[in-house]
Length: 221
Image 1 (cartoon, rainbow, N blue to C red):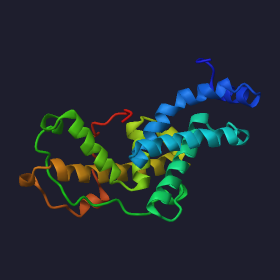
Image 2 (cartoon, rainbow, N blue to C red; image 1 turned 45 degrees about the horizontal axis):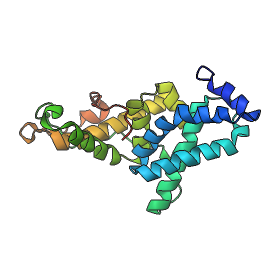
Image 3 (spheres, one colour; image 1 turned 135 degrees about the vertical axis):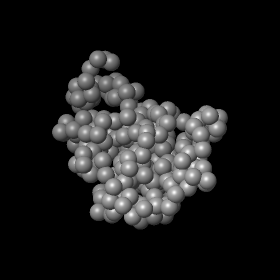
Image 4 (cartoon, rainbow, N blue to C red; image 1 turned 90 degrees about the vertical axis):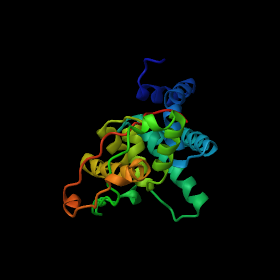
C-alpha cells in the first residue's frame, strides 16, 4: 500500500476500504503536526489540529475533487483548523487564509542593520539556537509565519506553497520575502554587532536585498 498514490487511496476509502485512510494519516500526520506546532507553538494544540483535520477530511472526503493533490487539500484543512483555534484562544475576529494577504503593503524597511558578530551557531548551543529561531518565527505575523514554515522549513516547492495558499507563485514569493526580511530583522537584533550598525538608506525600500538562507530545517519539536 505504500506504493499506492494518495488519490488511489482516497478512491479506496470511498469504496469502504477504511484501512486506506489509515495509510493517508500515516503519510501526512507528521508533516501536518510540524506545521500545526509552528503555527500554535503548543504540542497539545498541534495534536488537536491534526486530529480535527483528519476527522474533517474523512467527513468531507466526497468533496475532494482531485483538482489539487490530497496533500494540498489536507494541509488547507489543517491550516484552517489552526487559525480557528488561534482565533478562539486569542479572542481575535475570524481569520482565514484569504485575510492573510498583505501583498498590497510596501516591503518593510530594515531598522536594525549590522554585521552578525560571528557565526551564531558557534555562539550558542544547538538547543538554544533552535529556541531563538522558534521565538523569532513565532513573532512573525500569521501570514508570514505560514508561508515561511511551508516553504523554508517544510521545504515545499514554490508551486506547492502557492497552491496551498491559493495564490499565484509571484504573490507567494512576495509574502516569503516579507517573512524573511522580518525574520532577519529579529535575528539581527539578537546576533548583530552594535559596533557595525548602519543607518538604513531610502533606496533599500526600492531594492531590498534578499536575506541569506537561515539555518532551519524541518524537525518535529
